[in-house]
Image 1 (cartoon, rainbow, N blue to C red):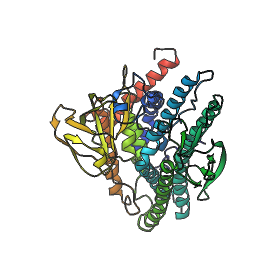
Image 2 (image 1 turned 30 degrees about the vertical axis):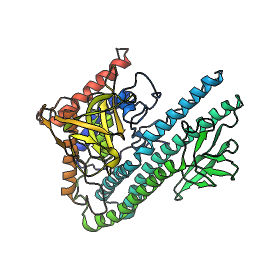
Image 3 (image 1 turned 180 degrees about the vertical axis):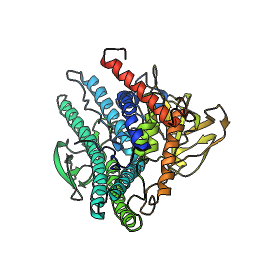
Length: 493
C-alpha cells in the first residue's frame, strides 16, 4: 500500500508561493526524512541506563509519544521475542521485558493518542477541500469533485487503519512466539485470558475485518479458552466471558497487555472521526458549488497542515516532533520554552526545557501541575539526546512543576497561551478571505517555528524580490542538497 501524499494543486494559471514552497521543500523534506529515525525512541529498552530521565520520569517508560502513524511516516515496532537458549530465569526476565517494551510502545504510540486522532481527520478534510476547489477551478462538476475529495479522505483513513492494525498484528505475533518459547520450560500455564485460571491460549487466527464496506483488513484474533468458556477479541470485535486482556500466569501484574478496552476506543475514534470528516466535506462541497464561482478562490498559495509540518521541520534545529503535533492541531506555544521539574523513576528531581502542548482550553501558569486534574492531555517536546540533538515528545501523566517560561529573546514569563488553527467544518473555509487568513497563519507558524527552534530567522530579508521565508527555504534546500550529495560521493556523514 502506498502512503497517502499531499494532493498536488491542479491550478495551472501561475507559479505561486505554494508551488515554490513545495518544489523548494523537496530538499528540506528529504533532509528531514534522512534524520527522522533519530527523532524516535520507539525501540529503547525499558530500564536502559542511558535513557533520558524525562522519558521514564514522565510515566512513558522508554518511549516518547510517536504520532507518525497518523501522518504517514511510520514503521511498527518489530517483533522481539526472547532469544533461544536462555536459562529459565533469564527467559522469564527477557519475556517480561519484551512484554513491557511492547506494552509501553503501544501505549505511547497508539493508546495515548486517541484524543488527537481527530487532528489527522482534520488534515485529510483540509486537503480534500483544497482538492475540491482545484476541481471547481478546472470546471469539474460537483459529483467529480465529491468523488476526488471523498477518495482522499478515505485514502488517509485507510493508511491510518493499516498502521493501527499492523501494530496490533505485530504485537500478537510477538506474544505467540513468546508463548511457544515458554512451552519449552513446561510452565504451569503461559499467557492466559485476564485473571482466568484456565488453560493457556490457542494460536491466534486471522479475521477479515470489513470497515463500512470500504476496506478489508486481515486482523489477528486472540483465542483464549478458560474454565468459564472461550473468549475471542481483536481491536474491532470481542466475544466471551471475563476481561479481554492477556497476562503471563506467573507474573500477572508485570505482563497485562493487548487489552480490548484499550484498543477498541482508538479504532472507534479513527472510524468516527473520518466518517464525520467525509460527511461534513460533502455538506461543505454543496455550499461551495452553490455560492462560489470557478476561479474565485486561488489555490496556488494554499498549504495543508501536512505540508506545513514538512516545511517546519529540518533535521535537527527545528523539531519534527513539535511540527507533527502542530499539524495534528494540538495547541502549542512555540514562542515560549518551559522549564519544568519532575521526579525520575527513583524519586529524584530533575529539570527539562522544551515546548508544552495541551489539548484542553486553559492557560498554564508557573507552579505545580497535576495532569489527572486537567480536561486535556499535556505534551512536552524536548531535546533528549545524550550525544546529539534528538527531539522527542512525551505525554506528561505524572505531577510536575513549571518553573518558568522564556522566549527567544531571553525574556521570562509566568504564563503561556496555547495556540491552534481553526478546525475544518462544513461551514468554514469557503471564501478567499478565510483561506488567505489560513495561509498566512501557516506561513507564520513556519517562520516562528524555525526561529524558535534554533534556526536562523530570515523572515525580514528580501533577495531578488523573494521574501525572507522563501530565501530561508532556498538556503535549507541548498544545504540539504549538499549534504545528500556529499553522502552519495562518499563524504562524511
